[in-house]
Length: 146
Image (cartoon, rainbow, N blue to C red; front, side, top):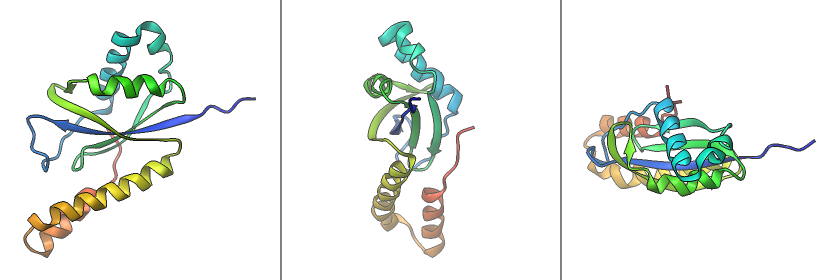
């Protein structure tokens, strides 16, 4: 019996019309269909057939981070298509691949380091302890896409 390997792709989605510190809300089904559309456009039916286990499992609206789960092998189709994607929903956007990991735990470690750098960079703009606390809660909030 052969074990099915997964890859977790950490992606940063930056909308061009929204400032970097504003939250962005994107539905998982819309993101899934956009990725599938671009894979079909670039790799045809073979690319779509290999994306059976594609899943968007995490999104943080504040830091614009998203984790996409795919099978090992076809994950290369996704990583090659993401820089070509120009829209997130109906908004113009850029997609950056930050990390590709074999386990979700490794992706979460990378996210913790990334969020810590983000907090250290933006906490100087906050005024007062309450605003700093709200920033830390927004950044560290982990939620699934709807």
